[in-house]
Each structure stands twice: as C-alpha cells, then as structure tokens.
Amino acid sequence: MRSLKVRFALLLGATALLVVLAALGVQASISAAERTIDRTLAAQGRLELLVELSGRMTQYGLAALEAVSNPDAQPEGLAVARTNVDRALVAVDEALGRSIASSDDPLDRTQYAARTRPLAQLRAARAVLDRQVTQVLRQSEDESRKAAIRGALNGFGAMTGQPLSFLIEVERRSMIAGSDAARALSSTLRVASLAAVAGALAIVLLLYRAVTRPVLARI
Image: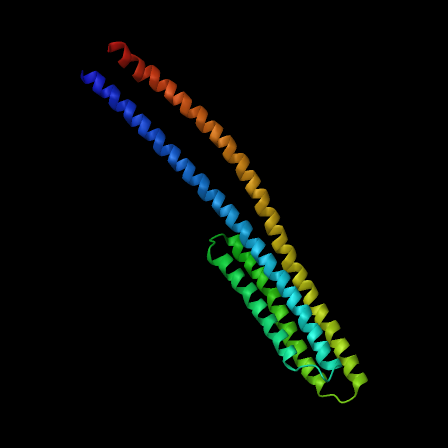
C-alpha cells in the first residue's frame, strides 16, 4: 500500500511539474513576442511622427515664403506654422524619450544619443529660419526680400534635409529589424514548441513505464 502511495505521489508531482514548466514556457514566449511587437510598433510610431514633422517643416517654409512674398498674407499663418513645427518636434522628442525609458539595453541608449543630435539640428534650423524671416521682413525692396528668402529657404533645406533623412532611415531600419526579429522569434518558438511536445511525450512515456503501468498491474 505504501508503495502505491509513493508511486501516485510521484505521478502527481511529475504531472504538476510538467504543467508548471509548460506555463512558464508559454509566459516566456508571450513576453518575448510582446517585447518584439512593442519595439516594432514604437519604431513605426516614431516614423509616422517624423513624416509628420517633415510635412510641418515644409509648411513652415512655404508660410515663410508667403509671408515675405505677399504683403497681404495673414501674419498669423507663419506663427501657426511655427507652432506646428515646434509641436511636431516635441512629439518626436517625447517618443524618443519613451523608447529609452522602457529599455535597459546600452545599444538603445547609444541609438538614442545618435537620434538626439539630428533632432537638435532641426530645432536649430527652425530657429535660424525664423530669425532670417524676421530680418527679411524688415527690408523694403521686393527684389532683395525675394532673393533673401530664397537664400534662407535654401539654407533651411540644406540644414534639415540630412538630419530628417537620417532619422527616417534609422526608424525604417528599426522597423525592418523588428519584423526580422519577429520572424526569427516565431521560428524559434515553433522549434521550441515541437521540442517541448517531444520532451513531454518522452516524460509521459517514462512515467507510464515507471509508475502507471506497475500501479495498474498491482490493482
């Protein structure tokens, strides 16, 4: 009788251990998948914000040109465009901050530093154009104003083109890397699940031979 109790205890303990290990494996798989998906979605969100920022900066350049070329243009148009650029810059900055706040990876911190420099260049370009527009508006001759604003806009484009392209390319690559990581994780989990099933079947067979079959034979 004592032998039967020991065997049943072994059977129940081994079964419980299998259930716990399976639950831990599922939890680890879900956590890994969620992290990969979150990183990919975050990169996509930052890319969308950068595209919006690019559009806002283009609108700001056009508003500056309109303010200089058309004396009858509404003065608040340039102010609204400037505010939209500043809001877009803040949104990108906050998104970058969230990405580093939720990560302990040193590589993420390095990439964050690499992103903040071109973002600072964009802020500087906006400030430079704003000063230049103010100076151009003080000029009285139309031709000199038009020439000055064209030069200012050319400089603005040169200052913003490379940083924006860099930031957009970085986030695009982050999205591609996230997609690749998701596919690799899916393949790994598929192999791991097959290995886990095979291991579980082997343990069940071992338990049957070592515990269940002897117990059934004695009943």
